[in-house]
Length: 397
Image (cartoon, rainbow, N blue to C red; front, side, top):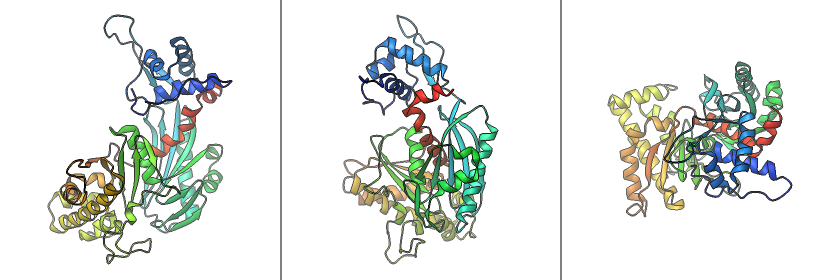
């Protein structure tokens, strides 16, 4: 059963009884780590089996759930595992990042229904034109998957987000924007869909929470910039204003290079993709693939670049762990590609700098989803409305 469902709520005793309990059953199945039976659902929710069976039948008829083949385990009637339906309802994830824009449709089972990625250099790109391009990618995916009902849109951006507004994205050169206005005006297919705007690292961490083995970790998203998200017991810690996780702008050397944010010595000036590529002696825009190849080949400049990046990353992570006592660090995106090369120095820095390392050494691992995880997280966030109110999706089928 799902590790996030220890306290799923109790059966409702009010006029919204059916809707509440339908959502309770849907959540129990849709977020489960392993397919539960009706008896499992009854045990977790506290609902009686007859009620669970009736609600499951509605969810199956509404194409939210499907039944697997019955499984016999010991004496008694075979149990029928329940799973999220594939290819029926999906969330649309969109992303604008420094070196690509993308769109991905993800269904209730977590499968990618369709996706499109367009590499490019979007630093300083016109916001309206870029967001229009992204909207058209989303429109094209919806047109390619007419059998899927789209629940909503999630847009991942590499910057500070508050509600429907992007406050600043230093590496894009964007600030004070309301992206939803452009998206909804650029594609009629998106105009009626609810939009969830979010920080790229936080959406990537949501994908990790869904697919990975842990529910308490610091997710570190490495691209040209570096973002992070803190997850404790399956819940995101976002800070008072929702701006936590700007690991890339932690200063690791006050006399270091000037960052695009205006400060000096930020972590991303040492461990961001552009910084590592430049330090390795590669031409600007070479990308992570050439860097990985050079490191694997033992090229001296590339090895020095990785060691410098790992030392800076380890120092920044140690400060984070000393402050929040997080048990696990997950490296995502480009950093995931380099985990094996970064690990020795990062772990050495953690061991020497984290006061509690002797008794509770933080565990470093690679993210479960390496390729554009924020797209998956944004799509999963767009599916929240289905989990919260499945009755609306059954009624509108």
